[in-house]
Length: 431
Picture 1: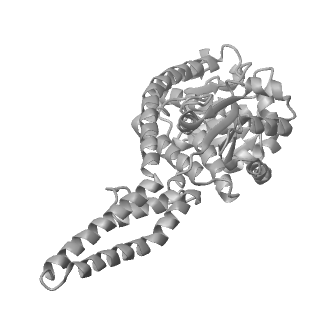
Picture 2: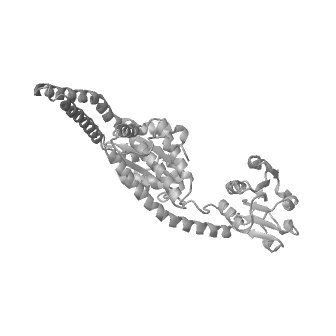
Picture 3: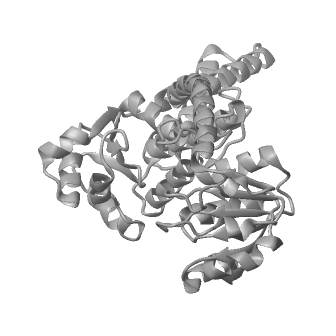
Protein backbone atom coordinates (compact mmCIF):
# COMPACT_ATOMS: atom_id res chain seq x y z
CA UNK A 1 0.00 0.00 0.00
CA UNK A 2 1.45 3.36 -1.02
CA UNK A 3 2.21 5.85 1.76
CA UNK A 4 0.75 9.34 1.44
CA UNK A 5 1.19 12.47 3.54
CA UNK A 6 -1.93 13.96 5.12
CA UNK A 7 -1.46 17.72 5.58
CA UNK A 8 -3.57 20.53 7.01
CA UNK A 9 -2.63 24.16 6.42
CA UNK A 10 -4.98 26.63 8.03
CA UNK A 11 -5.86 29.25 10.60
CA UNK A 12 -8.65 29.75 13.10
CA UNK A 13 -9.97 32.14 15.75
CA UNK A 14 -6.96 31.41 17.98
CA UNK A 15 -4.42 32.38 15.33
CA UNK A 16 -5.96 35.22 13.31
CA UNK A 17 -8.53 38.01 13.50
CA UNK A 18 -11.86 38.17 11.70
CA UNK A 19 -10.61 40.53 8.98
CA UNK A 20 -7.77 38.17 8.06
CA UNK A 21 -10.06 35.14 8.00
CA UNK A 22 -12.49 37.00 5.77
CA UNK A 23 -9.71 37.58 3.24
CA UNK A 24 -8.81 33.88 3.32
CA UNK A 25 -12.41 32.64 3.17
CA UNK A 26 -13.83 30.71 0.20
CA UNK A 27 -17.35 30.97 -1.19
CA UNK A 28 -19.21 27.72 -1.85
CA UNK A 29 -20.48 28.84 -5.26
CA UNK A 30 -16.89 29.01 -6.58
CA UNK A 31 -15.39 26.25 -4.44
CA UNK A 32 -15.05 23.87 -7.38
CA UNK A 33 -12.54 26.21 -9.04
CA UNK A 34 -10.34 26.38 -5.93
CA UNK A 35 -10.51 22.64 -5.25
CA UNK A 36 -9.56 21.77 -8.82
CA UNK A 37 -6.75 24.35 -8.80
CA UNK A 38 -5.32 22.83 -5.63
CA UNK A 39 -5.57 19.31 -6.99
CA UNK A 40 -3.54 20.33 -10.03
CA UNK A 41 -0.59 21.19 -7.78
CA UNK A 42 2.17 18.63 -8.26
CA UNK A 43 2.05 15.66 -5.84
CA UNK A 44 -1.44 16.49 -4.47
CA UNK A 45 -3.75 13.48 -4.87
CA UNK A 46 -6.76 14.58 -2.77
CA UNK A 47 -7.93 17.90 -1.35
CA UNK A 48 -10.75 19.41 0.70
CA UNK A 49 -11.41 22.99 1.88
CA UNK A 50 -13.11 23.85 5.17
CA UNK A 51 -14.09 27.53 5.28
CA UNK A 52 -16.23 28.97 8.10
CA UNK A 53 -16.37 32.30 9.92
CA UNK A 54 -13.95 30.94 12.54
CA UNK A 55 -11.54 28.86 10.43
CA UNK A 56 -10.08 28.31 6.98
CA UNK A 57 -8.28 25.02 6.40
CA UNK A 58 -6.94 23.18 3.38
CA UNK A 59 -6.80 19.42 3.96
CA UNK A 60 -4.83 17.45 1.41
CA UNK A 61 -3.25 14.09 0.70
CA UNK A 62 0.02 14.15 -1.23
CA UNK A 63 2.99 12.08 -2.32
CA UNK A 64 5.50 14.72 -1.16
CA UNK A 65 5.42 17.68 1.30
CA UNK A 66 3.20 20.46 -0.15
CA UNK A 67 2.67 22.95 2.70
CA UNK A 68 4.73 25.64 0.96
CA UNK A 69 2.66 25.27 -2.22
CA UNK A 70 -0.58 25.52 -0.25
CA UNK A 71 0.71 28.63 1.54
CA UNK A 72 1.50 30.20 -1.82
CA UNK A 73 -2.00 29.31 -3.02
CA UNK A 74 -3.56 30.94 0.08
CA UNK A 75 -1.39 34.02 -0.40
CA UNK A 76 -2.52 34.39 -4.03
CA UNK A 77 -6.13 33.81 -3.04
CA UNK A 78 -6.19 36.28 -0.13
CA UNK A 79 -3.71 38.90 -1.30
CA UNK A 80 -1.82 38.49 1.97
CA UNK A 81 1.99 38.55 2.03
CA UNK A 82 3.45 35.03 2.35
CA UNK A 83 5.67 35.90 5.31
CA UNK A 84 2.80 37.57 7.14
CA UNK A 85 0.60 34.60 6.28
CA UNK A 86 3.07 32.11 7.76
CA UNK A 87 2.75 33.91 11.10
CA UNK A 88 -0.94 33.03 11.40
CA UNK A 89 -1.01 29.60 9.71
CA UNK A 90 -0.60 26.23 11.39
CA UNK A 91 0.60 23.09 9.63
CA UNK A 92 -0.40 19.64 10.87
CA UNK A 93 0.65 16.34 9.33
CA UNK A 94 -0.37 12.69 9.32
CA UNK A 95 -1.75 11.53 12.71
CA UNK A 96 -1.56 15.07 14.14
CA UNK A 97 -3.69 16.15 11.18
CA UNK A 98 -6.16 13.30 11.70
CA UNK A 99 -6.36 14.10 15.43
CA UNK A 100 -7.06 17.76 14.57
CA UNK A 101 -9.90 16.76 12.22
CA UNK A 102 -11.43 14.55 14.92
CA UNK A 103 -11.25 17.45 17.40
CA UNK A 104 -12.79 19.92 14.97
CA UNK A 105 -15.63 17.53 14.08
CA UNK A 106 -16.28 16.92 17.79
CA UNK A 107 -16.36 20.69 18.44
CA UNK A 108 -13.33 20.68 20.74
CA UNK A 109 -11.49 23.21 18.60
CA UNK A 110 -14.40 25.66 18.29
CA UNK A 111 -14.60 29.16 19.73
CA UNK A 112 -17.47 27.81 21.83
CA UNK A 113 -16.69 24.22 22.84
CA UNK A 114 -19.60 21.91 22.09
CA UNK A 115 -21.35 24.07 19.50
CA UNK A 116 -23.13 21.80 16.99
CA UNK A 117 -22.77 23.86 13.78
CA UNK A 118 -19.19 22.84 12.96
CA UNK A 119 -20.04 19.18 12.29
CA UNK A 120 -22.61 20.21 9.69
CA UNK A 121 -20.08 22.60 8.15
CA UNK A 122 -17.46 19.84 7.87
CA UNK A 123 -19.99 17.49 6.30
CA UNK A 124 -20.90 20.18 3.79
CA UNK A 125 -17.23 20.82 2.96
CA UNK A 126 -16.68 17.10 2.53
CA UNK A 127 -19.68 16.80 0.21
CA UNK A 128 -18.21 19.52 -2.00
CA UNK A 129 -14.93 17.59 -2.28
CA UNK A 130 -16.82 14.41 -3.18
CA UNK A 131 -19.08 16.19 -5.66
CA UNK A 132 -16.14 17.84 -7.42
CA UNK A 133 -14.13 14.58 -7.26
CA UNK A 134 -11.19 16.02 -5.33
CA UNK A 135 -11.47 13.63 -2.37
CA UNK A 136 -10.38 10.03 -2.48
CA UNK A 137 -9.84 6.94 -0.40
CA UNK A 138 -7.75 8.64 2.32
CA UNK A 139 -9.96 11.70 2.91
CA UNK A 140 -13.05 9.49 2.71
CA UNK A 141 -11.59 7.19 5.35
CA UNK A 142 -10.63 10.07 7.67
CA UNK A 143 -13.97 11.84 7.34
CA UNK A 144 -15.98 8.69 7.89
CA UNK A 145 -14.06 8.10 11.14
CA UNK A 146 -14.29 11.77 12.13
CA UNK A 147 -18.09 11.71 11.87
CA UNK A 148 -18.17 8.50 13.90
CA UNK A 149 -15.92 10.09 16.55
CA UNK A 150 -18.16 13.14 16.80
CA UNK A 151 -21.14 10.83 17.30
CA UNK A 152 -19.36 8.93 20.09
CA UNK A 153 -18.31 12.17 21.83
CA UNK A 154 -21.88 13.44 21.69
CA UNK A 155 -23.33 10.20 23.07
CA UNK A 156 -20.76 9.62 25.82
CA UNK A 157 -20.35 13.20 27.09
CA UNK A 158 -22.60 16.16 27.81
CA UNK A 159 -20.38 18.55 25.91
CA UNK A 160 -23.34 20.25 24.20
CA UNK A 161 -25.27 20.75 27.44
CA UNK A 162 -26.07 24.22 28.75
CA UNK A 163 -26.21 27.68 27.23
CA UNK A 164 -23.42 29.04 25.08
CA UNK A 165 -25.39 31.86 23.47
CA UNK A 166 -27.26 34.72 25.11
CA UNK A 167 -30.46 33.68 23.36
CA UNK A 168 -30.35 30.15 24.74
CA UNK A 169 -29.20 31.39 28.14
CA UNK A 170 -32.39 33.47 28.21
CA UNK A 171 -34.44 30.30 27.75
CA UNK A 172 -32.65 28.51 30.58
CA UNK A 173 -33.00 31.54 32.86
CA UNK A 174 -36.72 31.78 32.19
CA UNK A 175 -37.12 28.02 32.74
CA UNK A 176 -35.73 28.54 36.24
CA UNK A 177 -38.53 31.01 36.92
CA UNK A 178 -41.58 29.65 35.11
CA UNK A 179 -42.96 27.10 32.67
CA UNK A 180 -42.38 28.40 29.12
CA UNK A 181 -45.07 26.33 27.40
CA UNK A 182 -48.01 28.40 26.11
CA UNK A 183 -46.53 31.70 27.31
CA UNK A 184 -47.24 34.62 24.98
CA UNK A 185 -44.19 36.67 23.97
CA UNK A 186 -43.62 40.20 22.74
CA UNK A 187 -40.28 40.40 20.94
CA UNK A 188 -38.75 43.86 20.51
CA UNK A 189 -36.09 44.12 17.77
CA UNK A 190 -35.19 42.03 14.73
CA UNK A 191 -31.46 41.40 15.18
CA UNK A 192 -29.77 38.00 15.27
CA UNK A 193 -30.23 37.80 19.04
CA UNK A 194 -33.98 38.35 18.67
CA UNK A 195 -34.28 35.77 15.91
CA UNK A 196 -32.45 33.11 17.89
CA UNK A 197 -34.42 33.87 21.05
CA UNK A 198 -37.74 33.57 19.21
CA UNK A 199 -36.68 30.21 17.75
CA UNK A 200 -35.52 28.85 21.12
CA UNK A 201 -38.61 30.00 23.02
CA UNK A 202 -40.90 28.58 20.35
CA UNK A 203 -39.08 25.25 20.55
CA UNK A 204 -40.08 25.12 24.23
CA UNK A 205 -43.73 25.75 23.45
CA UNK A 206 -44.03 29.52 23.77
CA UNK A 207 -46.13 31.58 21.34
CA UNK A 208 -44.48 34.58 19.66
CA UNK A 209 -47.46 36.92 19.62
CA UNK A 210 -45.94 40.25 18.57
CA UNK A 211 -42.80 41.52 16.83
CA UNK A 212 -42.15 45.17 17.62
CA UNK A 213 -39.66 47.22 15.61
CA UNK A 214 -39.01 50.82 14.74
CA UNK A 215 -39.36 49.98 11.03
CA UNK A 216 -42.25 47.58 10.56
CA UNK A 217 -41.07 46.46 7.12
CA UNK A 218 -37.90 44.98 8.61
CA UNK A 219 -39.98 42.86 11.00
CA UNK A 220 -42.14 41.17 8.37
CA UNK A 221 -39.83 38.20 7.72
CA UNK A 222 -39.42 37.15 11.36
CA UNK A 223 -43.12 37.82 12.04
CA UNK A 224 -44.19 35.61 9.13
CA UNK A 225 -41.93 32.80 10.31
CA UNK A 226 -43.51 32.77 13.76
CA UNK A 227 -47.04 33.77 12.65
CA UNK A 228 -46.78 36.87 14.82
CA UNK A 229 -48.27 40.33 14.41
CA UNK A 230 -45.99 43.26 13.53
CA UNK A 231 -46.29 46.46 15.61
CA UNK A 232 -44.30 49.67 15.95
CA UNK A 233 -42.41 50.65 19.11
CA UNK A 234 -45.13 53.19 19.93
CA UNK A 235 -47.66 50.33 20.03
CA UNK A 236 -45.88 48.42 22.79
CA UNK A 237 -48.01 49.87 25.67
CA UNK A 238 -51.19 48.67 23.98
CA UNK A 239 -50.13 44.99 23.90
CA UNK A 240 -48.25 44.63 27.20
CA UNK A 241 -51.36 43.32 28.93
CA UNK A 242 -51.67 40.54 26.32
CA UNK A 243 -48.24 38.95 26.88
CA UNK A 244 -46.42 37.08 29.63
CA UNK A 245 -42.83 37.67 28.51
CA UNK A 246 -41.04 40.53 26.76
CA UNK A 247 -37.76 39.87 24.96
CA UNK A 248 -35.91 42.98 23.90
CA UNK A 249 -32.61 43.56 22.12
CA UNK A 250 -32.40 46.73 20.05
CA UNK A 251 -29.60 49.14 19.17
CA UNK A 252 -31.50 52.10 20.60
CA UNK A 253 -29.47 54.57 22.68
CA UNK A 254 -32.50 55.25 24.85
CA UNK A 255 -34.93 52.89 26.64
CA UNK A 256 -37.79 51.60 24.49
CA UNK A 257 -39.75 50.01 27.35
CA UNK A 258 -40.74 52.52 30.02
CA UNK A 259 -41.99 52.01 33.57
CA UNK A 260 -45.33 53.52 32.61
CA UNK A 261 -45.86 50.72 30.08
CA UNK A 262 -46.01 48.07 32.79
CA UNK A 263 -47.70 49.87 35.68
CA UNK A 264 -50.53 47.72 37.02
CA UNK A 265 -49.77 44.96 34.53
CA UNK A 266 -49.18 42.37 37.22
CA UNK A 267 -46.94 39.40 36.51
CA UNK A 268 -44.53 40.12 33.66
CA UNK A 269 -41.09 38.74 32.83
CA UNK A 270 -38.75 41.02 30.84
CA UNK A 271 -35.52 39.76 29.28
CA UNK A 272 -33.36 42.74 28.34
CA UNK A 273 -30.36 41.65 26.21
CA UNK A 274 -29.48 45.14 24.90
CA UNK A 275 -26.41 47.31 25.50
CA UNK A 276 -27.27 49.93 26.60
CA UNK A 277 -30.33 48.40 28.21
CA UNK A 278 -33.72 48.79 26.53
CA UNK A 279 -35.64 49.07 29.79
CA UNK A 280 -36.02 52.24 31.83
CA UNK A 281 -34.13 52.25 35.13
CA UNK A 282 -36.30 51.15 38.05
CA UNK A 283 -38.77 49.20 35.90
CA UNK A 284 -38.00 46.11 37.98
CA UNK A 285 -39.51 47.89 41.02
CA UNK A 286 -42.98 47.79 39.50
CA UNK A 287 -45.23 45.20 41.11
CA UNK A 288 -45.11 41.84 39.36
CA UNK A 289 -42.22 42.75 37.05
CA UNK A 290 -39.24 40.34 36.98
CA UNK A 291 -36.31 41.78 35.02
CA UNK A 292 -33.46 39.69 33.58
CA UNK A 293 -30.47 41.72 32.35
CA UNK A 294 -27.45 40.84 30.22
CA UNK A 295 -25.18 40.21 33.20
CA UNK A 296 -27.67 37.67 34.57
CA UNK A 297 -27.44 35.76 31.30
CA UNK A 298 -23.65 35.91 31.18
CA UNK A 299 -23.45 34.12 34.52
CA UNK A 300 -25.52 31.28 33.03
CA UNK A 301 -23.16 31.11 30.04
CA UNK A 302 -20.05 31.16 32.23
CA UNK A 303 -21.28 28.18 34.23
CA UNK A 304 -22.17 26.33 31.01
CA UNK A 305 -18.71 27.00 29.57
CA UNK A 306 -17.05 25.67 32.74
CA UNK A 307 -19.22 22.57 32.54
CA UNK A 308 -18.43 22.04 28.84
CA UNK A 309 -14.72 22.42 29.47
CA UNK A 310 -14.93 19.62 32.04
CA UNK A 311 -16.74 17.49 29.48
CA UNK A 312 -14.07 18.37 26.90
CA UNK A 313 -11.47 16.54 29.00
CA UNK A 314 -13.57 13.36 28.68
CA UNK A 315 -14.00 13.99 24.96
CA UNK A 316 -10.24 14.26 24.42
CA UNK A 317 -9.77 10.77 25.86
CA UNK A 318 -12.42 9.46 23.48
CA UNK A 319 -10.64 11.10 20.55
CA UNK A 320 -7.35 9.40 21.46
CA UNK A 321 -9.18 6.05 21.64
CA UNK A 322 -10.77 6.68 18.25
CA UNK A 323 -7.40 7.70 16.82
CA UNK A 324 -5.93 4.36 17.93
CA UNK A 325 -8.91 2.57 16.39
CA UNK A 326 -8.32 4.51 13.17
CA UNK A 327 -4.64 3.46 13.13
CA UNK A 328 -5.59 -0.19 13.62
CA UNK A 329 -8.20 0.08 10.89
CA UNK A 330 -5.71 1.55 8.42
CA UNK A 331 -3.22 -1.20 9.23
CA UNK A 332 -5.94 -3.81 8.66
CA UNK A 333 -6.36 -2.41 5.15
CA UNK A 334 -2.88 -3.54 4.09
CA UNK A 335 -3.74 -4.70 0.59
CA UNK A 336 -0.66 -6.90 0.20
CA UNK A 337 -1.48 -8.58 3.52
CA UNK A 338 -5.07 -9.23 2.39
CA UNK A 339 -3.82 -10.81 -0.85
CA UNK A 340 -1.45 -12.95 1.19
CA UNK A 341 -4.27 -14.10 3.52
CA UNK A 342 -6.54 -14.78 0.56
CA UNK A 343 -3.90 -17.01 -1.03
CA UNK A 344 -3.30 -18.79 2.29
CA UNK A 345 -7.03 -19.59 2.54
CA UNK A 346 -7.08 -20.86 -1.07
CA UNK A 347 -3.95 -22.95 -0.54
CA UNK A 348 -5.38 -24.47 2.65
CA UNK A 349 -8.51 -25.54 0.77
CA UNK A 350 -6.43 -26.90 -2.14
CA UNK A 351 -4.24 -29.04 0.11
CA UNK A 352 -7.21 -30.32 2.08
CA UNK A 353 -8.98 -31.45 -1.10
CA UNK A 354 -5.75 -32.86 -2.54
CA UNK A 355 -5.21 -35.01 0.57
CA UNK A 356 -8.79 -36.25 0.34
CA UNK A 357 -8.21 -37.14 -3.33
CA UNK A 358 -5.03 -39.06 -2.43
CA UNK A 359 -6.81 -41.08 0.24
CA UNK A 360 -9.63 -41.98 -2.13
CA UNK A 361 -7.33 -43.22 -4.91
CA UNK A 362 -4.16 -44.13 -3.04
CA UNK A 363 -4.07 -47.65 -4.50
CA UNK A 364 -4.98 -46.68 -8.06
CA UNK A 365 -2.68 -43.71 -8.76
CA UNK A 366 1.08 -43.55 -9.01
CA UNK A 367 3.26 -40.69 -7.79
CA UNK A 368 3.53 -39.15 -11.25
CA UNK A 369 -0.26 -38.73 -11.55
CA UNK A 370 -0.52 -37.34 -8.01
CA UNK A 371 2.26 -34.89 -8.77
CA UNK A 372 0.39 -33.82 -11.92
CA UNK A 373 -2.83 -33.27 -9.98
CA UNK A 374 -0.85 -31.21 -7.46
CA UNK A 375 0.54 -28.99 -10.23
CA UNK A 376 -2.88 -28.73 -11.89
CA UNK A 377 -4.69 -27.60 -8.74
CA UNK A 378 -1.89 -25.18 -7.92
CA UNK A 379 -2.14 -23.70 -11.40
CA UNK A 380 -5.94 -23.45 -11.15
CA UNK A 381 -5.69 -21.54 -7.86
CA UNK A 382 -3.17 -19.11 -9.36
CA UNK A 383 -5.33 -18.48 -12.43
CA UNK A 384 -8.54 -18.05 -10.40
CA UNK A 385 -6.89 -15.59 -8.01
CA UNK A 386 -4.84 -13.70 -10.59
CA UNK A 387 -7.55 -11.22 -11.64
CA UNK A 388 -8.97 -10.65 -8.13
CA UNK A 389 -5.53 -10.02 -6.62
CA UNK A 390 -4.62 -7.66 -9.46
CA UNK A 391 -7.83 -5.73 -8.87
CA UNK A 392 -7.29 -5.58 -5.10
CA UNK A 393 -4.07 -3.69 -5.73
CA UNK A 394 -6.03 -1.11 -7.71
CA UNK A 395 -8.50 -0.48 -4.88
CA UNK A 396 -6.08 1.85 -3.13
CA UNK A 397 -6.71 4.42 -5.83
CA UNK A 398 -10.49 4.06 -5.70
CA UNK A 399 -12.53 6.43 -3.47
CA UNK A 400 -14.55 3.49 -2.14
CA UNK A 401 -11.60 1.10 -1.93
CA UNK A 402 -12.06 0.54 1.80
CA UNK A 403 -15.58 -0.75 1.22
CA UNK A 404 -14.36 -3.27 -1.34
CA UNK A 405 -11.70 -4.56 1.03
CA UNK A 406 -14.24 -4.87 3.86
CA UNK A 407 -16.49 -6.87 1.54
CA UNK A 408 -13.60 -9.17 0.60
CA UNK A 409 -12.87 -9.79 4.27
CA UNK A 410 -16.45 -10.76 4.85
CA UNK A 411 -16.93 -12.86 1.70
CA UNK A 412 -13.77 -14.93 2.31
CA UNK A 413 -13.87 -14.70 6.13
CA UNK A 414 -10.39 -13.23 6.16
CA UNK A 415 -11.24 -11.48 9.43
CA UNK A 416 -14.18 -11.50 11.84
CA UNK A 417 -16.07 -8.43 10.64
CA UNK A 418 -19.25 -7.73 12.60
CA UNK A 419 -20.00 -4.16 11.55
CA UNK A 420 -22.06 -3.55 8.42
CA UNK A 421 -20.11 -2.65 5.32
CA UNK A 422 -20.89 0.91 4.29
CA UNK A 423 -19.86 3.24 1.51
CA UNK A 424 -18.16 6.51 2.46
CA UNK A 425 -21.41 8.49 2.24
CA UNK A 426 -23.42 6.30 4.59
CA UNK A 427 -21.84 7.56 7.83
CA UNK A 428 -21.93 11.06 6.42
CA UNK A 429 -25.65 11.26 5.89
CA UNK A 430 -26.93 11.92 9.40
CA UNK A 431 -26.39 15.16 11.21
